[in-house]
Image (cartoon, rainbow, N blue to C red; front, side):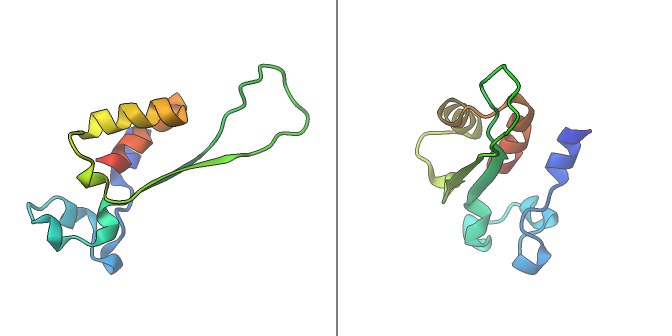
Length: 102
C-alpha cells in the first residue's frame, strides 16, 4: 500500500503547473516547469549503533539534484543505484526515493 501512496504523491501540484495528469502526457520537456526535473529527497539517518542510546540525534539527510533528467548516460535505475551507494538510503525509503527519481 505504501508503494501506491508514493506513486500518488504530489508532483508539484496544479497550482505549480505540474499535476499528476500533466506528468502522464507526452509533452516536450520544455512544457514542464523547471521544478519538475529537480530531485529533492530528505530522510532521517539511521543510527549504526546496535546499543540503545538514551539521547538520540535526528540527523536529516538531504539529497538534492537539479536537472536530474540531464544526467548523462544514466537511466533512473542507475541514478538510484548511485544514490543508494553514496547516501546509504535505508531499505524502507528506497521505493519512495525511486518514485521521486522517475
